[in-house]
Figure: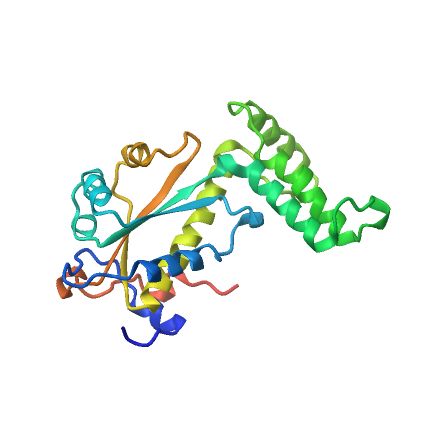
Length: 245
């Protein structure tokens, strides 16, 4: 294994690899290390509404391949990592953040002795997060949307409070973790391919994932064959997408 790459080197090295070399296995412990680094990704409100399923079993991979439409990136993969969005765990994650505050500030501090930072943070996870995430078949979300619409006429306010909005927030967060993972893998000289083309319902059923979970993406892992990179990298000219304001 070559020396670990810098961030810039890893970004330039990373390609979506469609064919992996079956003669070059990858180290499960290194992939797990990269998943650990995925968990360090920035995420909305530090809620960490994600789970990572590291698939090393060849039998499970073989069962998942048809659900990825037998594409080469899945069929030749040495391992898979499935990034799962867990918006449904918002209560548990908010509680975990509040428990962490106990270790930072101390537990059961009367409000009169709490610092302004502690008051704001406890209010955030105890009241604001429940307001943003709580819903009942979309009804409460619609009520929140109308309330925010009225308040927003008079001052800037956070507007993404419906079920669909919070679902997007959770998926954005999970996508940040997936990118951390792929760059970490590239730094190790390993290759990946994020696969959008998959039957996520069938994969979810195979893994026995809970009803409230959603698969964000499936990332195949291995070491590239030369033909596994389909041509030179193409990007829209930078001046067409870059705006300095």
